[in-house]
Length: 269
Image (cartoon, rainbow, N blue to C red; front, side):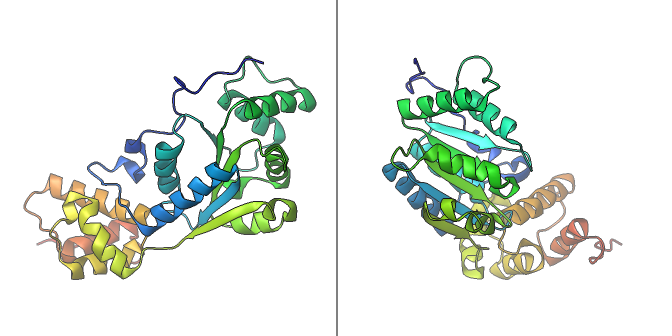
């Protein structure tokens, strides 16, 4: 069976500009401990053709870290898979078939379809990136375990998910016992926030540490997604009214936009 070579295959990973929530402009990729830990797991997965899992609450930067690592380590051999919640087996196979670049439409019969997928994965090294694992049911998870194989180990697999991802895998002992390594994302600590946020986006350069910690306590909560949302709202406000100053009053106004049920807008004279 002829399979495409990796030399000129376009990457399936999105461009770095799409990594930041809401397309936040001038945002910098921060070299956090979580990014380094994620890359270490992905290196293991590639080296040993193994399965690893990256999980944690939403908005903490899991997908960003995984994409960053895979752009460095396997930009052309990553097969990026992301399914709708509750995807059925036909959807699982069809997307995998097309992402592998197999010709035509997949056979309707599961056996012939799976055989060609197995052949494609054995033909050259691949990394299967499976995002939003929390939305997959028992059958898809078991399918990926069988797809990986035991002695065959047809591809490295990186599972990424939030919510009950770890519990779902724990509930599948056959899959759980084959996961080589795990990494759980946690919110950034106040110390990390103070070190990272001033360099995250130019609007925070020179901001007082007390102001940054206040914003994190009230709305950031150590989440990059929350910080991107705060930064977008601040950027728009300062662009629309250059006379405004980045201070606690303006932060309070941003908080009122994020959660108007508990925050009062800034009173203007």
